[in-house]
Length: 124
Image (tube, rainbow, N blue to C red; front, side, top):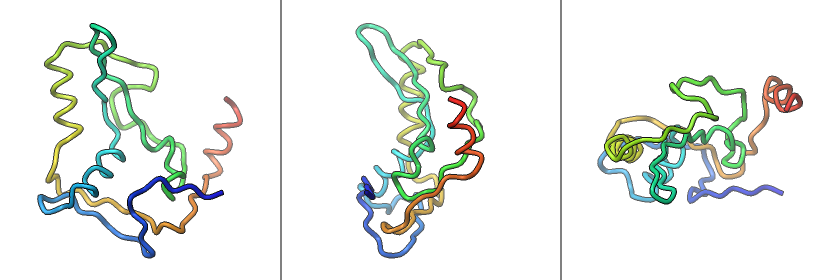
């Protein structure tokens, strides 16, 4: 079964450029594909939760590899925070017009696993 939960049903690979003229649905997709700290409220507590979309990249037709952690937090690190940090994380997550280029594979492409990814999942 091939399941592609994407708004992009392109027959060809394409590149999205994050500019002011980018359509809202394309921008929302880019936000979902960014690694970031997600602001979360649990009861009266505010938290920053690490978000790694590369952990489910194959669902979107991308290849799955062992990611480098270029962010300064690990998966198990949740940070309790104040409203200022929460607002800053939200602003970073929703920033627009970054001029970033993002490759979107055609909707018929099936992502593959690298040998290193297969090896790393067997040790879990």
